[in-house]
Amino acid sequence: MRRVHIPLALAVLLAAFAFAMPAHAAPVICEKYGSAQIQNGRYIVQNNVWGASTAQCIDVNQNGGFTVTQAAHNNATNGAPAAYPSIYAGCHYAACTTGSGLPVRADASGFGNLRSSVSMSYPGSGTWNAAYDLWFDPTPRTDGQNTGAELMIWLNHRGSIQPIGSRVGTANLAGGTWDVWFGNVGWNVISYVRTSPASSIDFAVDTFFSDVVARGYGQRSWYLTSVQAGFEPWVGGAGLAVNSFAVTTSGGQDPQPGGSCQATATTQGQWATGYVVQPVTVVNRGSSPISGWRVTFTLPAGHAITGSWGAQFSTSGQTVTVTNFPYNGSLAPGASTTFGFQASKPSGSSALPSGYTCA
Image 1: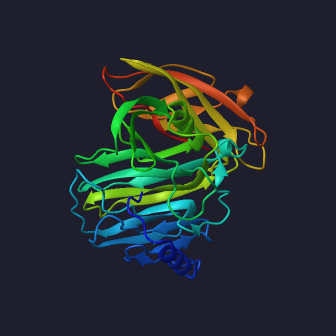
Image 2: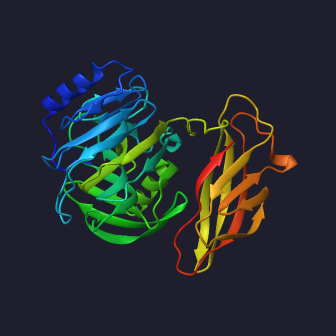
């Protein structure tokens, strides 16, 4: 996220510098607005120290992420963060990645297929958030400041910080419960703050943008210009890391470790001591048929499965393993099946299962 923006000419120069780097390079970047391509230009990693003059360095990982190795920030927590070290797909101040399909209009047929996933690691010190930043503009803009909406998804945060604006409600989306914040700083800023910390997420972009539109903060005629994931440090920040990041436009995601299937979950209802997750959808994203599948996920502490349907469940500690029945194990390319479950939880807990993976 950037509240103060660099001139377009400088941004173009920085982009040109980044694109001139060898595709195999995995540099340590300490320049204020330094950036680098990874995966043959599929993504760009940026240092982006836009809100401070303090030092920050990031170690770029060609596999799809980066680690903040140095961060001397000490910004006041009632003001703007120091930086937004991040990785992105799309166009940001004239620096565009390859093959992202962005900008894309939010009512286009391909918009509903757009997905992203991220896995992050956090240090036990400092003041920061871990957040997606998705930018929308009334035009298919590839340079300069977007003026439609900034959609932030806070997976975690540490210290006495809060999003721009004020809290306007809650939402159950993408397997989690979120506090929704809204403010306007010349463009709409809508922030979804997870009520229980998470280190990963895999979601359809339209899951959140549909909620933005329903609340009157966004328009289907606007264009998504970039999908960014990273951190906003106010104090410190060394040790923050994006371990993996992906943006896909085919309605799926990069194959998960161990196979070509994907599992996504929807929470249908919650009450004080329980909830229902239905459906959990298993999709074959590969090019060959599969004859069986296995989904694993993690239950929060104190939660327990009390009922299930559509698959076979086993639990070891807080890890749940779900396998197919004979009738729904074979999936052709693009085919899917579903299952669901009910779980109990301690009264007052807002946590939900996370980390759905399929093999």
